Image (cartoon, rainbow, N blue to C red; front, side, top):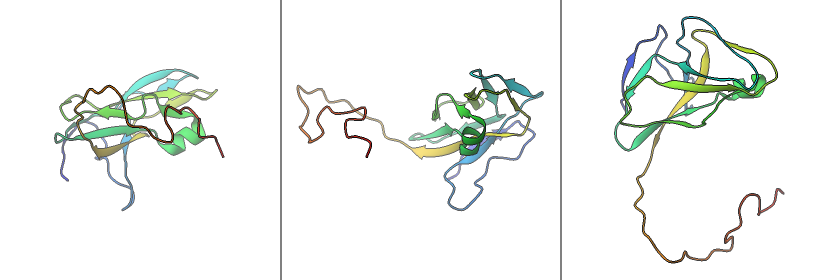
Length: 144
């Protein structure tokens, strides 16, 4: 699949690190470091603008290493870039740790996954079909 992209950053285009990678790393495109205090959030710009085909979205997801090691995650994970959006891709980062975290220019802050999606058409009915699960949710099937 080919996707049109404008790169206004000083960094290389996102790319897949391995042949089986689902996501491409997004890099911070900032003029000065940003320090996130505990529980603070910010939008980190990437300098990237894309044109997706209709029927696809770009999902902005956390990087597992940042989340596990530093407590840094994408607040609205996954963030969605719609096919008709033409603005700069931004990443909403939040610091869930107890320590300050500094973001440097060029740092890999999130990953981008391109995904196909469907559009739903609602059909109003009076009742739904029965299943063995029924209305059970929120842990109703147990933990073991």
